[in-house]
Amino acid sequence: MSKPRVNLRLSHKLHAELERRAREPGVTKTDIVEEALSRFFDPESNLVLEERLLRRMDTFDSRQGEIERDTALCLETTAHFVFYWLTRTEPIPEGQRDAAHALGQRRFDHFIQQVARKLGNERGVVSRVNADLGDAG
Image (cartoon, rainbow, N blue to C red):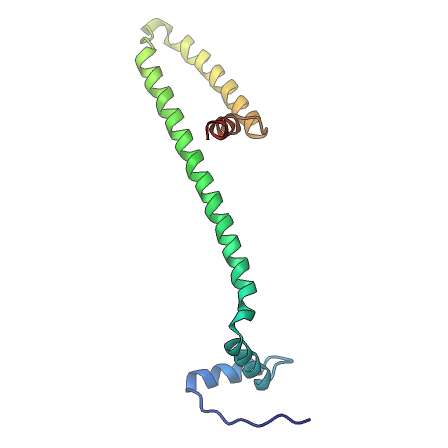
């Protein structure tokens, strides 16, 4: 059964794009126009893609909120520690600074190792704080 023939007038820009796309293997002008008209007359067919995109955007929004919360947690924790340290630590006498520096370096290295271990573990501080926040809510 033959299809009815339709004559159209297109802008030069659309015509050039139609010609360019129809040069691709396995694609005809009829295929392109039929697909465009099908989508135009049945906008519900596009909802599947829109729903997938909306779901991904919702997931992204949720993860962004978690990142913002974790960043705020880190900032508050660091600020609290610095404030406490500055108000409670006595100045080191001149003759003891080298030894204190060496001890501080060893403690810092140990601290970094502990942080790295906790980041690779689900039982780190952030998960504990999140659990406490969940219990409070």
